[in-house]
Image (cartoon, rainbow, N blue to C red):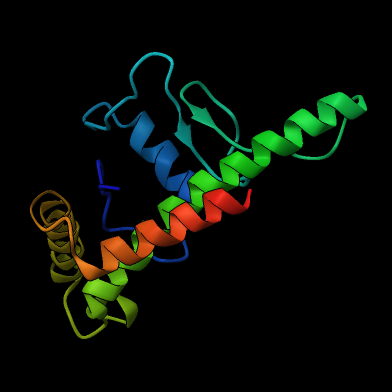
Length: 147
């Protein structure tokens, strides 16, 4: 998995949806919109909106509808797990991201995060047998086989 867009500069307590809304409302933003028929998988704290799909909330409907929603939610969670694993790999590769960077100016902190995301993508392209990538891909295959 690669990073396609990184927004830095927000405080850690800012909610992800607030940041996304700010990005989408910014006319100068270059957020990569998804191809037709594709969606960004977002977690349950987001709302469903064009191009973004969250899991179902609650168990409403007939037993068959509930079963379909449960299956969708399991597959959605599996995809979201891959996204979270990508952040885990980033933090394993660049341990500075695991701890507070308060000793650096905000601009420096922003540059550190951006740089490591770019390096992560570079390594995905040019060092495919990286220990962390192989480990997470094996975990993902195992998790898929358990479903």
